[in-house]
Amino acid sequence: MAISGNASSQGLSGNIDFDEVTTQEHWKAILEHSKETGRPVFVAVIAEWCRYCRLLESTVFTDIQVSEYLNRYFINIKMDGEKDYGKTFATLHGVKGFPAIFFLNSDGSILQRVNGYVEPSSMLAYARKALRRSDLIPILESRYSEKIITPMEMLTYLDFLESTDQAKAISTANDYLEERGEGAFRDSVMYLIVRKYALDAGRRITLEVVQNKDEFIRLYGRESFDNYFAEMFTYNLETAIYNRDEKMVTQLIPLLRLHFPDDTDEVTMLGTWKIFYAETDNPEGYDSLISLTLATVRDSADFLIEEAYDIAMDYIDYPGFPELADRWLDLVSEMKKPDFHVTYLHAYINLLIGNVGKAEVMTERSRKLASGKEEQELVKQLLQYLRSLKEALPEEGN
Image 1 (cartoon, rainbow, N blue to C red):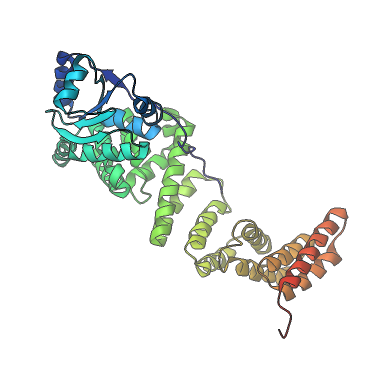
Image 2: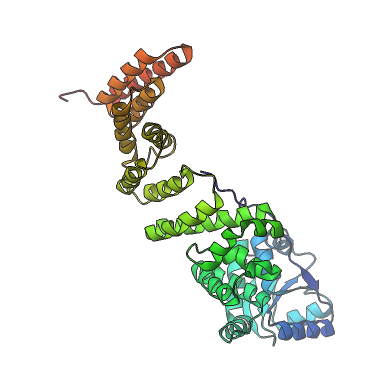
């Protein structure tokens, strides 16, 4: 089952939007802007001759996560620590070497100081720590609790929450969206919140987006909806697996039916449950689901064959699942006379689980049913595999 989505951003590069400060008047204007917006200030003090400054600029300031975080939350300043106001700033703050990094509040007080070169991951951690200490987050928290926060401020607040607790960010976003009423996704800024945080399958806004899929696509494009759905699906299924929570999977199923209305055989639905039960080591749960589904399918034998084939291809290493496939193929043989492909699949599964005796029986049946060079070659491969498996087993009596 494929649910399309964005590729990872690993390896991508970005750039920090720096403002170069050379005068005291410019620096005062920066601090005033910080007071007006609530955004703290990131200052990089460098020198032209400094090798580690160049390394910082080429590796850290171009890192996609660092640049996106600093551009979103900070006013970013660069100064030459050996000339103009940069020299004064360096002297006032006791800079002894370059590069020197400062995270400052709007009153100029130091939130975090970093001396020398650090890796991107460390720079990101310092930035997050500084933001937690800054005036911005308490302001946004207060505006949120007073219900006067603007959608753009809410987006900033949610992004901050996500850096420490994704589940809290998603829950807070859904509370906010539900307070805004129906149709929130139609507003361009609210759409950004919906797109990134309306991921809880059990909440109203998620159902509303999927129910209005066509309108969402008309407003923002097919790719945007597909990426949203993929992220929502992945978040809920991964959380359900982690918590071993069947209820979360149950909440996903109506959304899958809305998104895939042509899936009359419910292949996608069963695939979702199969992933959940496989990852939670619960073959019995999936077996019970298959037993219930058998009463509704048009051709029970074909259905069980497809399920066995799927397990042979993708779930053979999950405990208990190969044994399910083996038993289902036994049922198929009672329903109708198996052809070469079913018998070959049955032999293959028993070989993979090390059931030598049954594998020999099914391989011999496959040999008798084989017609044509291709099928005979497949049987030959089974026999070779069977011989190697028997040779690897300890001799009887040893």
